[in-house]
Length: 253
Ligand code: URA
View (cartoon, rainbow, N blue to C red):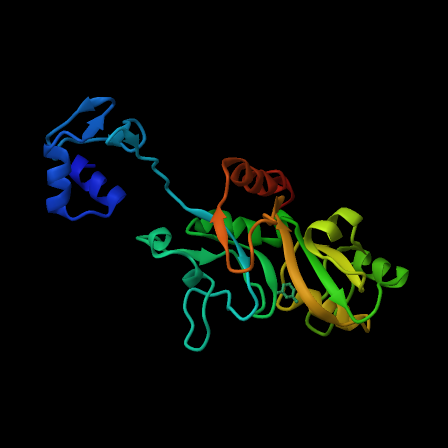
C-alpha cells in the first residue's frame, strides 16, 4: 500500500493534510523519515509511525459492551436505538461492526461487537459449544427437578429441544460482583442461543424470568467496571481466550 494512503487510513486525515505530515518529516518507516508519499509499505512487515507513535494495524476490531435494557441487538433499526450506535464514531469509522448474536431488548450484559465474521460465526455455532453464562432473577427459587431437567437436554416447547444446560445457584462471589440481593437468583450456562432460550426454558418448568443478564461468553467475562451502555476493546488475552474456546471444540463439529 502507498504510505500516504496508509497514513490517511490510520489518521482519518485529508489527502492534503497527509501530504503535509509526510513532507514535514513527521512520518517514519522502520525508524527512518520518509518524505515520499508514494513509497510502498507493508502493514505486516513495516513499522510506520507518526511523531514517533507506531500505528497498530488491526485487521478486525473486537469490543465488549455491557448492553443496557431498551436497546436492540442490531446494526440499524427504525424504531429503537441499536447496540452499534452506542459505540463512539471513531471506533465505528470505516468498520462494518455488528453484534455477535442477539440479546433480547430487555436483556442486559455482555455483548461482543466486531467486524470479524468468521469468529462471530464460530462463536454462535452450537457445534462449537462456546458457552454462554447468564444470571437470572426468577419468580421462585430453582428446584432439584429443574436442575435435572436443564441437564437432561429438555424439550422446551414444540419447536425447541435444548442441548444439556447447567443450572445452579449463584456463588457468594458472583452475588458480590454482579447481583446483589437475596432474591431468587440463578446461573444458567448454555452452549447454544435459540430465540428467547433462557426465558422459554424457565417458562417450560413453570418458572418465570424477571431479569436476565449475560455474564460470560466463550470464556470471556463481562468487565464488572463497565456500567450499562459502556464498552471497551477486548484485551489480547480475552481475544485469545475466545479463539481458543472455538478451536478447542473444533473436533466435535
Ligand atoms: N435467552 C433469552 O431468553 N434472552 C436473551 O436475551 C438471551 C438468552
